[in-house]
Length: 435
Picture 1 (cartoon, rainbow, N blue to C red):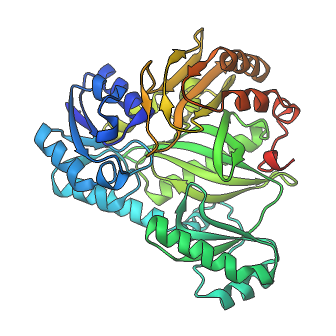
Picture 2: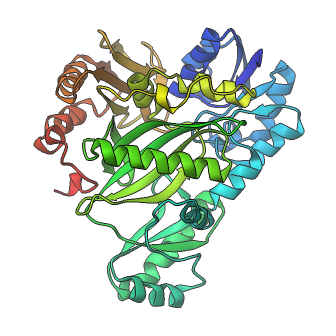
């Protein structure tokens, strides 16, 4: 097991990882930008290093600076959290070259699974249903021809896209050229890859994802699914587990399919398989695989009792899973609301709700400054209860109790969403904000 880990991230996830390491008896090293010098993760870590300026490119995306800090601190491993360099194969290779373990899949695995068009082929070969679509498209003419065959509307997607970037919905041939160039340009700007492919637009639909954990010995377990259909501009706002849209038989079949596919793909670590569920038929189509810790991992943790961060560290250290699928119990309901800042600010007053099975993952303290340079996530409010009805009441009570003064945020919006008839009835889909 590692004795010292560097956390190559910031905000609530850096705090989350540091706490897991402390519970495991592992020393921690924080890195920070000049904008985060007073941040909570810096105070909680055993050591800390400033790695650059406020801009991400100068700090949290600067792999050379991060690895240099790890070498200087004598860290044996680097945990990338989510975002930033968490799915960067070149960074994983840089860690390996310097004798530092990357807590995540191998660079080779990331490159193999990071190509979404190739991954869809492998997923289909592994028995997962996939959305009708195309390989990478050569040009606009080929896109027009493919759309005529598949049938409008279609989705254009950047091959290396993520976080809703590089995606365009196309309803007709006259829209194709602009959409193709927009998706391609966005993919190039955000990911350095202009390649675009096409998928049939499934509508109405829900976003379902399955959490998996696999070790080097080939053991794979599925820790249930999460419903992530409450989204705005492809950005998730609320997640819950289990999904109210799946019955037990469908859930069991989906988990079995995912475990078999992950084993066949030879994946090692924490990962998430994302599906688009056709509301009309109930069919789930594989979209992509996230080869990292998800933002919403706490929903699964509070439901199942398994600490995903600790298991991610153990698996990276070569430890085999100490449990099997039969040990996974999906009882009750967990819900997460993402609390986001509307604009930068300074926390003047903070009150965090408490009580049994109420969790708020955050980096906020009174006096904390929320800078303008990074993701607006302030924290994740997570609750668990024996029934979905009770979990809803618990979440609404917790939202009403949560106070973050000095930083404009979306708490009131989350109260409105969780109080809506569609959310209460579990009938919501990806069109929630369009209705």
